[in-house]
Image (cartoon, helix red, strand yellow):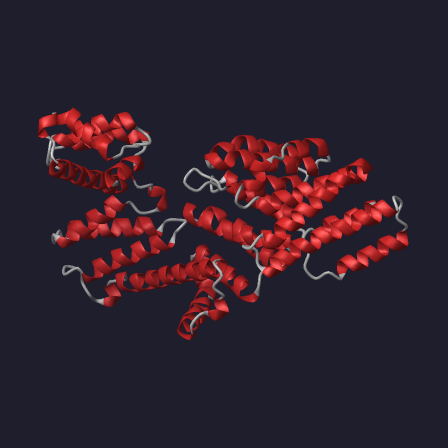
Amino acid sequence: MKLLTLLKALRKEEYRDFEKFLQSPFFKASDQYLTFFRYLNKQFPTFELEREGLEFAFRSCFGAKSFTETKLYNLMSGMSKQVEQYLAIQLVLNQDERNGLSLQRYLLVKALGERNMSSYYRAAAEELVALTESLQAKSSDNYLAIYLLNRDYYFNPDTPKHLDQQPALQSATDSLIIHFCISFLRLVAEMHVRGRSIKGLPDLSRLVLDAVLAYTDHVSIRDKSPLAAIYNSLVKMYHNGVSEHGFRDIKELLVENFDQLPKQEQRLLMSHVINSGISMYASEANVNQELLSLYKLAITYNALLEGNRITHIAFFNIAATAAYCSEFDWALEFVAEYRKFLEFDKELSAVSLSKALVCYENGNLENARSFFDNVVFRTSGFEMIGRLLHLKITFDNYLKDADEFQFLSHTLSTFERYVKEKQSLTFDKKETILNFIRFVNHLTKERTSNPNLPMKAKTRLRKKLDGIPYIVSRDWLHKRIDSL
């Protein structure tokens, strides 16, 4: 129900303020709201109430005889509007001014302009424009605000329109263009990662994109807006195809300008660049050190969490990257410190899989195996990662102990069957994983037939591996050939 959903949106520390809000004679239309709210507070934080529970709450607050369906509906509808008003007012009053523009001050300037406050309005508008333009880390919304302030200032009836005396018109024009360019490039980049090829854009959109890229390529724009410069480079990299060189270039550009970016853009661009690096790692590029430095940068600038949460996939990727770089203590410290930000139903599997990988990379096979259970294999996003790691652990155990052969054979056959039956996998993805399973199976047979494989046979295996175009963990397989 709408009211209960809105009440869940309130943070615990806001409940006292909302009580004060309901007591305000300017906003409240009924004394019943405060009474009903205080009663519903007993259901914090879940507010799990069915229709019967709400009816009981109404009767408890206002008497059984006073209840009607219409009264309950009107009370809940009116109270929902009160919560909505409170949320909007809180946004205006408590907006983080580090974003550069106080919404309250902007609305005040607009109100002064609409009330013909003349010199008072101009002074307030000029001060807010100067404050916003002085920001080191300007977002596209900051440029939009500068445009709106200058536009309203210029078209105010009391503002002189002589261009040589009035720079507001040019400032409005320049700011609007930069706002559009940043916003457009951000959307194009997002479309790309969601599967919409830049080359597949409609002709008119491509014309706009070419013009935007040319505009943001100009040295004056790159100097004025590092954000525009980064999005320009990001979209070009996506258009040309992500490469190891392209990843390193965009990573350096991001790091160089990171403290000049708004927090929201830090998170978004960090995600783009990290995902590009992950795609390079999947292509066997050696970029783990660069990826780990990005993760550490995000943590340093408090740009890792989104809404005080972290996805289980990102959590695992960070721990895994640190493990690949042999920073095992750092990885375990990260797991311990950030597990509280995981979704409750993903925490156990994310922590277990992360610790398993750290132990495995550190050479502790027994501990690595101990962290596995069915929860890991059933967690969305970990089905393949978990099974691949489990197979690697099992194979390495077999290399140390031939008695592990039966368990390894069972692991290979069940994993192969699982992949073949997984309908959500594309054909290419499925073949990439199946080729890995088949090659591990081939290595197992080679080891079983000859525990001391001669160099000639290893050379043959390396050539066979290099001839497989699509296969995961190619480097891992090369190392296992060496160990046979």
